[in-house]
Image 1 (cartoon, rainbow, N blue to C red):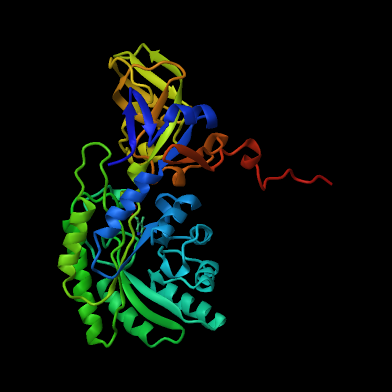
Image 2 (cartoon, protein in one colour):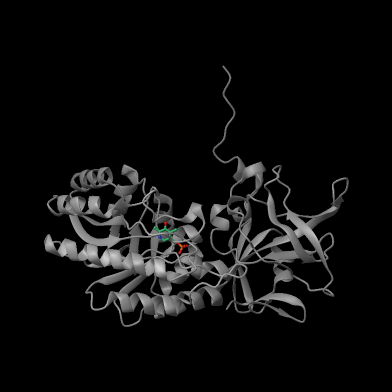
Length: 421
Ligand SMILES: *Cc1c(COP(=O)(O)O)cnc(C)c1O
């Protein structure tokens, strides 16, 4: 359920007409509904009521500090994968003790930054990372809280680019190797073994792979017990999918119920790292039609709708061939046409949708690209020297610009001409 609905054929975000925001801030822009973000966060989090847990929103899905601040106010934490995301999480008011640091390539500076902040746990992904973390901790006279990211070799049955829990993926360390590392870490000065973590992939539409991974993790935790290593935190990562087109992902409550059931009487605090399932359907990308054109001369006439949003604003269609529903902001008489909806970037891969049946549109019409709240703005770039779009958050009958549109000076910030002598 989300709060982007038509009233008298006009698309609203909560109680604000989307067209009104477009008039005020220009296009393209990302538009988020606070009520939807809240609802999704709470639906997910409440599923785990009765079990000690902390819901750490995956910052890479949607990283605006206003949104991180919203989740923090709802009791949430953050799952980060870079120093930049740590900076954002802290700016967004996320308490350090609810921040988890994942990622295969943490630099020394980033490890140090995490230690300084006093985060809940580093999810370590290699033996060398453990060594580096120990060095940083000893240099700082601190103890680093650690979990290892275990790669359970489970097939999440999702897109190859976002599958992370197979042995062939770069993430985590195998169960066998992890055991040796835990024993090593147990005896290391400056290291405090606190948890076990895994994250097997994104946009999962079935519960089974999660349960299979959890089962393997539980067996692993039992093995650790035998070595005298006890675990306080069990981090199950993110990955619950959403409906973009006709996928039928598990409801967060069913996901939570299945996890709790499998968990049994295991005595530890659960860490959850949802991203997409919370933000995905809570945001849209609003764009304006610049031109329509028909290319003739091929086997069939090809109809194009050229909009002012492009693959630099929303890269998922180009990168993954992902489907996003596209709807008009003002609904017409229902006549449709087969079109490609494309951006202005000089790449054939720059499309929002191909061979799509879309209500007939005209120059200057507004379109809403749905389900763009996760991995939308956060993956945006300046390719073709396009300033990044504005981000707007609606609360009830008011809208707030939570990130202004970039200008041309933003594009060249830090650049300089060579001095001639
Ligand atoms: C990307 C990521 C997540 C979030 O995944 P979603 O599919 O958006 O829920 C959680 N944990 C880690 C370690 C990640 O890399």
